[in-house]
Image 1 (cartoon, rainbow, N blue to C red):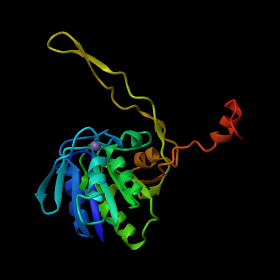
Image 2: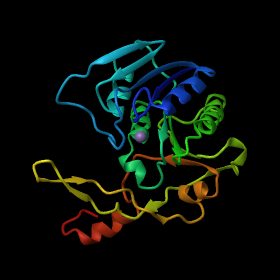
Image 3: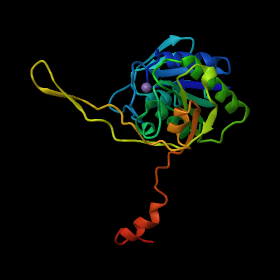
Length: 249
Ligand code: MN
């Protein structure tokens, strides 16, 4: 069993160190991760310049690129080594609902899926630092993936409450909830009096009904959401056929 580990918080973040350590108990592990924090990099690929890789020894590499650059290179020529699983995280903070669209952690998993390798993204859904809980859950879930392999193109988005392990209230398979739009941008002045802006903080939960990832996390349960990259709004295809003049339907 070979596992490629990546993340979006950077190769030296506490979450990836905990995850890689847990994975080494289960498999032959290589780590390829960004050389700095690239959170919210989404699925971006670096096409305008080459990407330098630094070998830190013991199967750990960092790249001057995005999470998706890391997984893409690891699967396409960096190594003569093909992983059976791509595992991403453990992200510092939740990836719930709309977060998955922006998340580099989830994108790293998606990139594995594009190459036919099942992938799992792990996020610590809080900022109280219980990485030991998330690492233990990651090991449990990946052990399950090894014993009962997921189909090709599978992506699981796993969020783990940031609490001591004994306080977990179980595991739940969920759907994505949603958030309100992000808060207002914050305007400041630079030393020359020119305005600069910070993107606003993330919005509060909008859809956190029972069955959602938000609801599971609020209930201290581990949330496991199967993701699909097909973003087609299937119910709206026929409606749009009527709406679009000249449509062939
Ligand atoms: Mn991150």
